[in-house]
Amino acid sequence: MSQDTLRIVLVLAFAASLSLVISTIEFGDHDDESSLPCMYIDIPGKEAVSKDAYVSCRITVDSEDCSLSDADAGIKGRGNSTWGLPKKPYNIKFDKKTDLFEIGSAKTWVLLANYLDKSMVRNFLSYTVAEALGSEYTTATQFVNLFINGEYQGLYLLTEKIQIGEERVDIAESDDEDNNFSFIVEMDSHAFKDGAEGVDYFSVNGRDYSIKDPDCTPEQVGMVKAFMEEAWDAIGSGDWRRVDGILNVDSFVSTYIVEELFHDADVDLTSFYLFRGPDEKLHSGPIWDFDLCAGNYNATRANDPDRLYAAEKSIWYSSLLRYDEFRGMVSDKLSESKTMITQALDRGLQYLDMNEGDFVRNFERWPILDRHVTMNPFTLMLLDTWQEHVDYTVSWLNRSLDTLLREYCQEREPRSARVTFRRDYIGLGSSPGDEEVLRHQDAGRHRRVPEGKQMLRRARREHNQSEL
Image: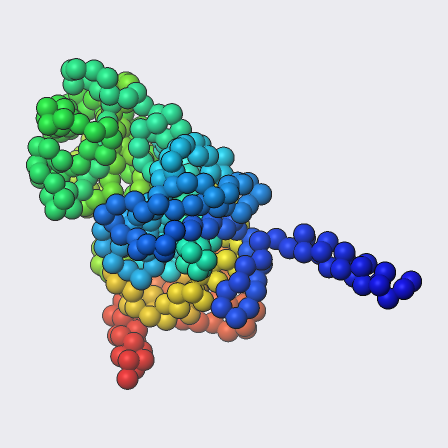
């Protein structure tokens, strides 16, 4: 074989090898393989993105499950407190309906940064459990590596936007002149900042609600408010038949279990959705925004997995739980679904394990694991790696599920470590006592993580020393 022929063979072999590389992407000074899809957003002129208006862009998705090239779209910021964080969340809106990852065709999509959740899995796992429980119109998700103007932004959770649509919340569009039209509302403690009462939002029973879909006239806002007041009159009546006549109670049972399992800090503040469908009943859901939950909120009540939280915190659930009928439905749902809950968590965690590299890489871009992040407990600074944050979350959920089963199904014995993330890193969070023991088997050591004041003092001391 001549040298020229050999060169040709080598070049062809090299080209063939390139075709086998799966989504190799450059991060910093080294290349790694990504097992999750990549989304590229290019903004002409590199115009700054704000929350005020969409900026024109083109979007490309590189994945076996979704092939999209230079689709015309817009991008803008989203969120309340989260928009002020270093890693920004976004809305994207295509010029025409687009199906991403076989989730369904729609124009508007959400990119959640999950900056406040160092495990990055609380939203994902809560939606996974909600879907297993049959909660209506649970948001579909897909993790993606996001690039804007060629710069890696980190790992994001792509989700559907909560809105009326055949492939979203599939309820009838508003087309009636009376008060029987379908709508989606959100309990929104921020509503008064952005609009006028009676036009952009309304208040019922001491809580503000904004109408998310459809766009309503002031007269229609009044109709929605009247219907919500009717629902509350029924709940306060003590007559279960009236409650069952105006609420889709099954939907409230399912969302309550998810809210209680995860201890969503926002349950009585914001991101609590309700909708009215063709059955002319009020439904609970879809659930939304679970980054501050499952031991990830700097408040004692919310962080304690050994007590109920939503039952005390939420005006909706605390009122419904006064009815024996509702408590009985919660008990029945938990009894029939407890295995499905653990299986759903297991499936979700297996998915995370398969894609570990993408999650770890996010914290090369955003090195915050050893830093205190706003609204997070100081105790989480003791967890050094993404894997430890995930295992802490799973251990916390195990204990919370024990609490639910003990309260509603009279299961007295804790079911320790029913769900684990990694075979070499087991959370024993369901063990009784004043401290949680995390055992790292392959390192041959035990790491004891005390709870309560001792842990808080230690975390603060370490934090202060790091600032010196």
